[in-house]
Image (cartoon, rainbow over the protein chains, first blue to last red):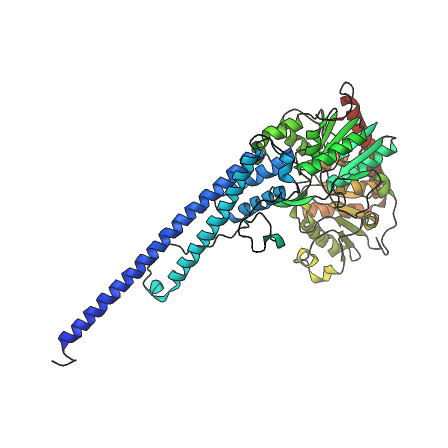
Length: 192
Length: 375
């Protein structure tokens, strides 16, 4: 038997194909898991966005605020919740509206000890923070998925099938603004 | 009468509402009333003696664009203080449905309140969401004024009830006399236009086509244009030979604006739609300019169905050219139209309009007590 014999040749080819197959299916499985993670992150983000706009709407119609602020907040919250496609602008607008409302010096103190005010503000703070976290994790998942799908093998064999390339979700979500105060701040705490 | 006026937008930023309040305040003072205006204003901006600053307006997203508005409890407490010190017989708020100072004033005040609605705004679900709060503030308004039919329709649709129609005022005196710009109107005659060139509804394109038709037969004729917009873009399709005869001034100062009206033989208002009142038209009338205007309902009304200015079918460049051509050839007819326009515009002169507003004040004041801070 020599190296040139057909038997050896066949064994090598079969082995190579088998190894390739295992590798490809491992890569495909990984991509599948990444897509699943992405979907879960998107669902969490959507939930967080809806929750934020509902709590903002609740604050607007609570009677705790003056009518001008209520009207502003209700408008921004409604637009954010109603947006189907192109969510980024209305969601950023809601952040900016919330920021303008909460940035008033002494805002919290102005609400005084009104029944339920503290709970509502804390809930809104929590909801805004959830948006911040959910967006971070979603964009992480997008980055990982995009990197995996850019690999030559994934592109050659179209391992992702027909799934569209996921897009980053870019909005303003920090309630402390983009100035110095926001520097290094991970937690979008409301001021006042 | 002691009148408190509330301006929702920054005082020194140019805008129709601000100009209206300015004109009304001056006219009321001339009529012998005591006037105080509260308005958002930037620090360090010189204000007329009767304007009380309510602090800076904050840029916030509203209705799809970023607006500068004054809201929040700090603004509300400034309005409260102003009301206490002002001791007004009547409170007159402008644009009460905008989330700014006027809405706050309705909220914190009790007593006779008059409101003027300026713009037509589509009813939105956002307003529905804040409905109860908006409603309880707006319910306190006892006399409502709309500056146009469109604004009145909006008001009726949003909040029910009715409103008195009192048009925008024009400071006629300011426009009556001015020197033409140097070299205008010139031997060959001149047409004039004022408005945004890049806003299709202002109809600049219609005027350009008409000017091409006229210029072919009248070698000396020129066109004077004042207003915002990119000149190259606006003249894109105009033959190069004609461009020397079209003078673009761009955005002009208030004084130069008055001079533009006095610098032309025929002033053209070719608007194709969207004008609820036509402030430019009223200004041209105040300046005594012979006018050719499209036959929009609002224009037809202001020009008294053609007595105070020629009307042409909306969008018809050939008809505009024919009407303007006739006027260029007949100085007598021009003088007639000029006199008729000057007479017709008296109806919109601020002293006249302000008297109508005072009548509304007088209708709501009896029995309503004084303006007080709500408990």
